[in-house]
Length: 446
Image (cartoon, rainbow, N blue to C red; front, side):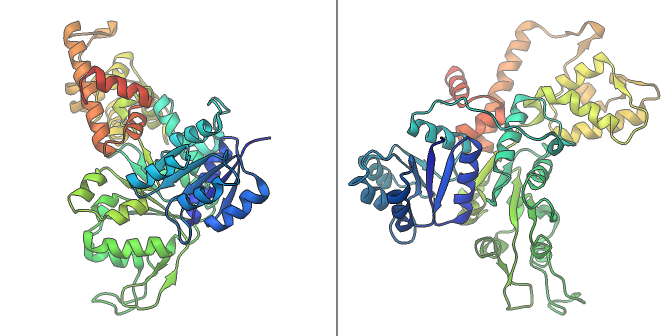
């Protein structure tokens, strides 16, 4: 019989998320919306572990821990909070809490903390993604396979998801994968690029407007929030949303209600929110360009997508996929062209690779794509390859130095992209957290 975990949180989205993650890891779970409800369940059902939020209406998580200690001194508690308060942490540990995690919770760390609290070693069955969910998705690298497993694991919840990554890495592809894997897949996924719409039009685009609300509003419009009703709303480039519009978005996310431009009537909208950015939102918050409260609302689950240069195993499968897409006669890559593609750094990521394959396919008049068919930037910037032997025309010392510099730069970028979060940065790089810490010490990057 699997261990039963009691999840205590006043917010439904967090309870649902934790429950799904725990059940996918092989545990059973019960939910309580308050400390008082949790006490009743503890008395009647004897859970193996309590995972509780700290700050809730009524009794807090720490008060729940204190009230439980007298009759159930051996019951382990794992506390989770969006407010990093050292005093709360010290109080919890003094009362016997086994761990104290800060929201947004890294899901791998969460499951590990639960296993540690129960004295269970990791190594249970991994998440298996049904093949039909992966149609059109190329992910042969360990880094991307790890991302997709995490994404599939949380797809069934209604929690907000922040998808981070450089421009062109495939953030919208991941968002569509979440939608197609969720219970909302039968309803629409509405995508909006916040950077492509001016601030004055974005409010009308999202919230809708009444007829005559402004010059040119000749008819009523529902807006994107209502178009996504029952489904998923995907906001790309969320970091480019004008600061003056962010309070209205925050209210819509918190209440599930919107007010069209030119109206004073609230309208309910049921949607799952996914957002994406290539910006460092933590830095934007610190510099006053993005609201901190909105950031916390969006960053319930953070998914970091590694750049293409950090997942070399995906380059050739993606290239072949783009060459074959919609073509009756598929061209193939020569060995030298394949090596050039793998040596290139792909600053534009998957989008640049797709464009490069379209360019090569149009220029190539034979069945085999050679380096001369590739865009000039790729031919000029890629490591020079000496004929069909594949020997690089650079010294071994230069290669080692270049690789070290490239690795240091990649680590710096990953840490900057994730606001210094080492767990997320490690996932972005396709390595373990312990491996990242080793590299930080090795390269004296502390």
